[in-house]
Length: 70
Image (cartoon, rainbow, N blue to C red; front, side):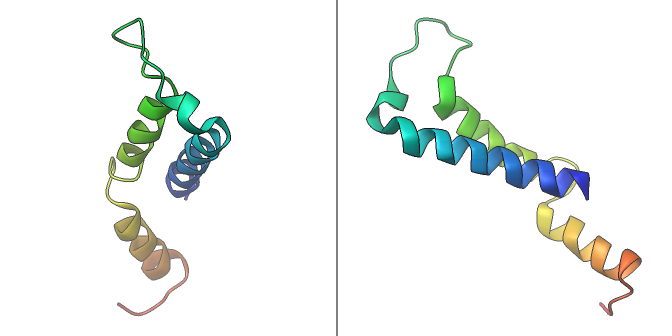
């Protein structure tokens, strides 16, 4: 459950930052390891894949925790 919350939260934070910064978020980076908010936004998508996709995690929670049918 924490994985799902974390994955959704990182996406929302990154999206909000990009919405606030607008075109300024697309600044050129002076360091190879500093992609700024754009890099964080792209990285946030990997959080919903690692450890099983978010959809699979929700299915597991529904079946095992809530006792819902398959």
